[in-house]
Image 1 (cartoon, rainbow, N blue to C red):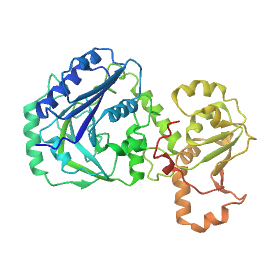
Image 2: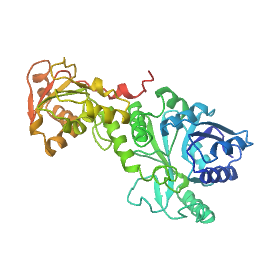
Image 3: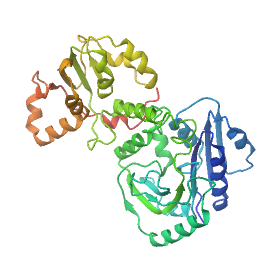
Image 4: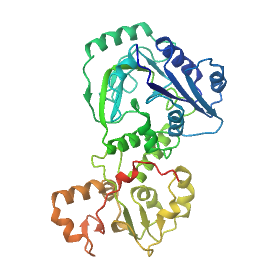
Length: 393
């Protein structure tokens, strides 16, 4: 018998057959667990189905407006009434004792990952909370009895094997108030992708302990409502590109960077041209250049919440960034781009290895050279902790 102090949050966007399947398979195991559904812009009868549910343990919300995946799960978090929440997808099937396994390890200061079993669609995407095993590629081919037999055996073997873990996963369980305190997932990533990287990074900065509970198992058909859905399958590559650009705009480094330091960087560019802007703009806090940025801003602004008119400034404007990087745009090449993409790592590593290096530069007009770049450190301050809580202005 589980303690019933966890709400299961599920974002919906059409794909009603999987939503129904998730609901009925979950109810077969847990008749009274709180299920929280949010549906934005569904047009396939999902909203009418939600209205038809005669279930006192379901909370739901729907709206015809389009929203991001982050908005969807933030609304679920708002609606939930339990102390803890689990992020789940409607293309999942929980196994027996899923909730009990999670409840054994609940803590306000712990981020819990659960284990997904997936067919070999992304078999090369290895992570400690994923088991590649085929119990069906869709509802029609799903082998429930085989899944339950496997989960029963796996849980017996891994009952007490709980360990600390690094990495990023959307498949998590966490204290609900923690999510509310930091503002939840960031809607910057429109319509989706990178919101999980962003959230886990912010939770890491809070110092939460991360563990994996192997015995909390579910089967995941994989991306039936996202990248492989009828709506998104032709747009996935572009959505991922835009999402990654917004992550770099916000944090100043790629999701794969080993150094999670955010600096205020200003690029001072002589002989800049509009062709350079798509490469350079996401990598800094400000650009100072006299090229015409109108076309770039008009075409790129719809893809980001950052104000590009404020970000791209004229060459002679006052420069208030902590780190200033000057270079000649005519000399910019792929090697320079690769360096600039890793500039937070390079600067952090250089200063950590040579503490005297910073004291010689700080507060002076001196610069050090790195390839085509001349770098001036005005203030050596990192800003990643300021990004833990979302600015709701």
